[in-house]
Amino acid sequence: MSNFTEIRDRKGCLTAIKTSLKGENLLLNPRLNKGTAFSLEERLKFRLLGKLPSHIETLEEQSIRFYEQYKEKPRPFDKHIYLDRIHNENETLFFKLVGDHLDEMLPIVYTPTIGEAVMRFSRETRRPQGIFMSYEQQDDMDEILAEVETDDIDLIVVTDGEAILGIGDQGVGGIDICIGKLAVYTLCAGINPHRVLPIQLDVGTNNEEMLSDPMYLGLRRTRITGKAYDDFIDRFVRAVLKRFPNVFLHWEDFAKNSARKNLERYRHEICTFNDDMQGTGAVTVSALLKALDVTGANVSDQRIVFFGAGTASTGIADQLCAAMVREGLSQEEASARVCLLGRHGLLVEGMQNLSDFQMPYVKSHQTLSDWDLDTTQENIDLFHVVKNFKPTILIGCSTVGGAFTREIVQEMAKHTKRPIIFSLSNPTAKAEANPHDLLEWTNGQALIATGSPFPETTYNGKHIEISQCNNAFIFPGIGLGILAVKPKLLTDTMIWAACEALTKYTPKTTEGIPLLLPRLDQVKAVSLKIAQAVAKKAISEGLAEPVDIDEAIQSVLWEPRYYGYQD
Image 1: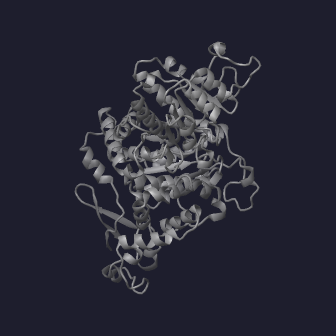
Image 2 (image 1 turned 60 degrees about the horizontal axis):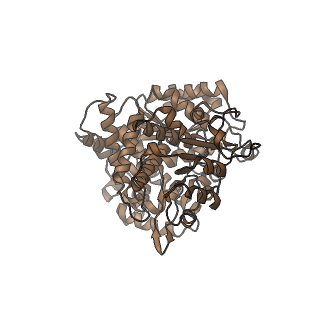
Image 3 (image 1 turned 180 degrees about the horizontal axis):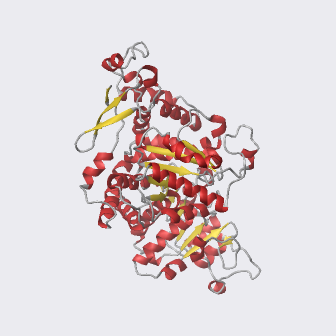
């Protein structure tokens, strides 16, 4: 049972909190702790006299005080640890502080800094958060979920830790990704942090360094695979639906085959979402549509090369092809306008270990018969694909830092006036190109977006902001729309509605080097527009009951403020 109850008005808006906790137990509860902001009346009523300094601060004063302490931390990881400590002690203050400095702190709370936190999880573990479900404890799933202190869980983010960011298999450390992702939902869309749950599925790890580390906290065995893995996932989904039948289930950082398989297996049964596939695809397509606004071209006229052929690349490719089909191409014609390169070069028929979801983009030998290639060349590299396919768009999801060389970029620029180049890999060191180099190599003509945050650069004496394809622009708004109207499923058309809403929000410009996505300080307004579009589409498709959408959204919004407590 929960140790507090939210009191709401007739419109469903939170007005006060009732709790039976007192004294140290209240101070130790991060969801209820106000620290030095407890009023004198609350200190008397909840047995807090003498347990706090006498001066009573406001939340705003606390945020200023803790920001001064934050600035004293020397390295990004130290700052991450500091914010994590606040998160574990006082959730309201954490979200107020980070929200007040979102542009500065989001890269600390989430990517790229969280990658280091994940890698060091077993050696930097503080207070455990979330739920850990081990393969060896699968018979206890119902009991584990029964111990969650509230029935009111709206959103779960789950990972098995196999494909974390650009750093690969991190085993049980993946829980930090789930915690970080949920924080972004709250910071960028006002999702109530008291109604969310991070879950780590521990099915082992193939990371030899972790398996040999005596400090590693996860299951010390190689990863469960095949039917045993599928059955474990199914037991997990059934246990979640039994405990939280109306939950929105978000899959995060699963490897490419299991990511696609899990989503396709359950997306017609429950309301579920994979951010690596669908979120990355939607925010990237939105930025591409804005770039095409600048060039005046249609998406169906583009030739697109992806360096990287995993979950992110195919997710973006699928959504781009869907956009081409909306403009009148057949599915086959759309797929023919896309090339994918994996670790062994261009995906060509006859290659070993191709996945089903890669097959639409595999090129036949007949297609390549007119290409200028060495007849002995088995693996067709990026330069030769760019030279022969003549792409108008080049997208990197490879985690190969510096892969977009001067030679490749200038070869691309020979065939298109304004090359669109997105280096989406993160963290920053794994980005395929530096934005400044891309501008220099294309005489300022490249239209650029990155996956990691890059500082503004200078070209021809002008300061240039770099657009970041940050999934924070898309998934929080989708989540807010879902939680507001509770649709049975999340459909491709609802995600397309989110994509269009984001594209419309970014101002159109044809001058200079434009931003292709909004600035991060606009993300809450963006999320609201996306939530409205998603909710409207869900209702129009008959997947949610007709309601006043604005009222429904307002009823689920949460903001970092201290509510009055009742005992």
